[in-house]
Structures are given as C-alpha cells and as structure tokens.
Amino acid sequence: MSLILNIDTAAKIGSVCLSKDGQPLQTLVNDQQKDHAATMVPFVQEIMRTQGVTPAQLDAIAVSAGPGSYTGLRVGVATAKGLCYAWNKPLIAISTLQMMAQGLYMQLKDNAAFYCPMLDARRMEVYTAIYNADLSTVIAPQALILTPDAFAAQLDHQKTYFFGDGSGKWQILLNGHQNALFVPYEMSAAHLSLLSNAAFDRQDFADVAYFSPFYLKPFHSTPKK
View: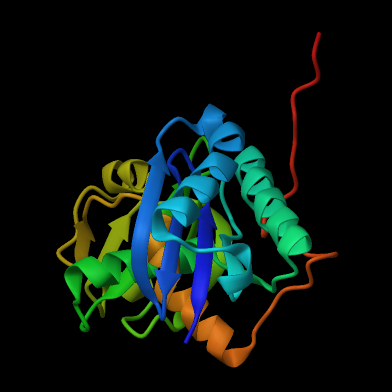
C-alpha cells in the first residue's frame, strides 16, 4: 500500500498527481511553464484538501527528475525536496523520459513496439532514450543531435513510437520510415504513478539533501550585454 504525491515540471505542462497503489486519484495541470513555481504548492494543497489527505498519511513524494527544462526541473525538485523536509517523507526520483514512455504505453498497450520519448533541447538536439514495452532501457537517456540515420538500427528491426515536443523536428528530418510512428502525447504527473509505486515497493529513495535533477548536459546561458 502506498499513497504518493507525484510532481512533474520538466516541460511546458506542469502537474501534480496524488496516487494510491500506483493508481491516480486526482491530477491538477498547469500549461504555462512560467507559472510552475507559483502553481505547484497550491496544487498540492488543493489536491490534499479535496482528497481529505493529511501530510502524515503520505508515504512519499515523487518527482519527474529530468531531463527537461533547467528552470522547470529546479522548480519541481525544489518543491519535492521542500515537502520531503517539511513532512519527513522519502523522495522518489523518476526519469522524465521513462515517465513519458510509461504514459504512452498506458495509452497504446502495444507490447511489440519500442517507445522513444523526445524532449526538445533546442536546434537539432533532443533529450531522448528508447524503452521496450516493459520499460527496460534499450538506449540510455542522452542529449542527441539528430541525424537522418540516428535510429537506423532500431527502425530496421522494430516498430518504434516517437513522441514528445522534440519529435516533430525528427519527423521532418527522417522523411518517412515504415517502422517509425509519430503519435501525440501530453505530459502528466499521473504517468509517474506506476513507476513511483514500484520504486516505493523497492524502497528506492533519493538522498533528499544531495539529489539534483538529471540535466544530461551542462547549463549554458547567454551573457547579458
């Protein structure tokens, strides 16, 4: 049995989901990235009030831990760590890309395919990975500069779903392949539920004091003139 608060702010859409034993109970969504910092804590308060849950009843806090937007990840991780400190709860950190693969698999239930989430990392670069239907890693998370033959080995042998806000530029670059399927996908903290429940069962917790997001590449900012 587990009651887990799940938080995702890795991309444009931010959300909070309360789940019980891996099943979402309620999810609140904000689609304005600049407002994530202002909405996450009120979302937590509203969900817990609506569901009649107290901090003492929670078993853990889970967060979509990257890769993704640098600012968004900092907001989500800081919110999750703050709640863990305040309520003395364990922290569960889940790869954003694995969360996305879980979410799309829940929609399609295609056991014969690979799942390739893509988050835009600007220009022709994406944060990506490939998972099978069991959510096992086929290609590890990475920051990848796209080329027309980037996934040739996988596509020659396996139907693969490409999705996420970085998949559009890959679809144009690829220019068609019988095993490449491009499908719509919307980020949601609800897609953390099964993964965070499994992590809780394994007692797979992150160090609240020292954990930082999975950025995958260093942050670079343009100096102000």
